[in-house]
Length: 249
Image (cartoon, rainbow, N blue to C red; front, side):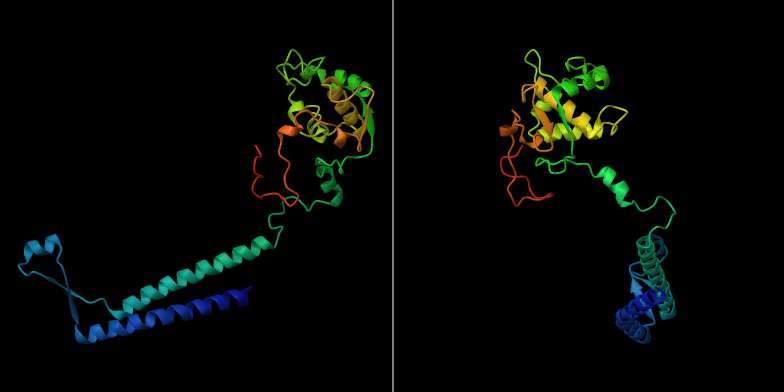
């Protein structure tokens, strides 16, 4: 690190010297030919002098060199500080905060479920299994029949009102959301079988599947969601951060 900073400083110093050399030569010539230079006088000087121009002595070259030297040293210090900061940041940890996550800890957060459902865990459930669980852990916020309350939105379509979850294009989204975010204040406590059961209960109540259907990692991605056709599927070569497909909303 010390040799890197020293090399940068020497390179910068050489460049500054090469840039200042013509300035020094011109200053020397002006000093030899004209010890005094003229400038337009200030208002105070014009009031006490009838001369159209004031007379000011040239600034000694030594003063100019000293000023340039100070500026160069300050720039070198700033450059060295930036290089040292970048190197220090790259050598984590520097503040003794936190620790490197283990593969087991990362696995706990790697729970996203895509439309294909390949990330779904083993397990299964039916609408009957989910009904009992819904009454115990979900009805307090979403109502006994999923009609919604002030604490939670409508989950089962009633009286012409469409359920929020039935607006999603894939049933895997329902499974993923329940698994990661429900029940409130106890997120992540449901087993895979319980999530399958709750998903089956909600889909059956909204008419997407039969109450006797068994949902598992193979069946959930195959559920035909009624709002699927309102979405535009991305092209096969689409990747995250690419422009949205034509027609996507």
